[in-house]
Image 1 (cartoon, rainbow, N blue to C red):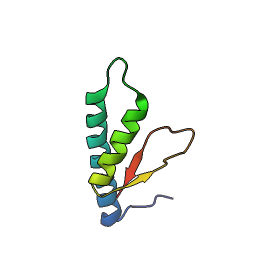
Image 2: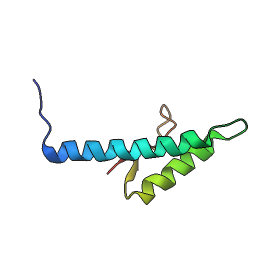
Image 3: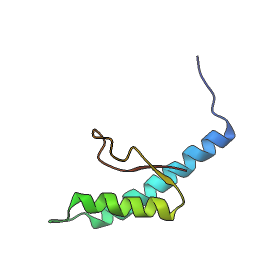
Image 4: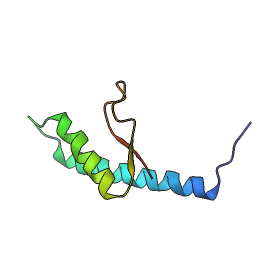
Length: 70
């Protein structure tokens, strides 16, 4: 069975993707020798909050990064 997404659901997915894109661009610019990966998470979390989203999966042991959802 195929479940079609509503326009509202598609809009939320699109917005989440935009937030993740912005966070990844920001973190990508931080990458370099001697840079702690913990700093990546903190920076991404700050950006997620700045954009008015909520972090998703924080503390989930298998996924050590922050995901966003509007």
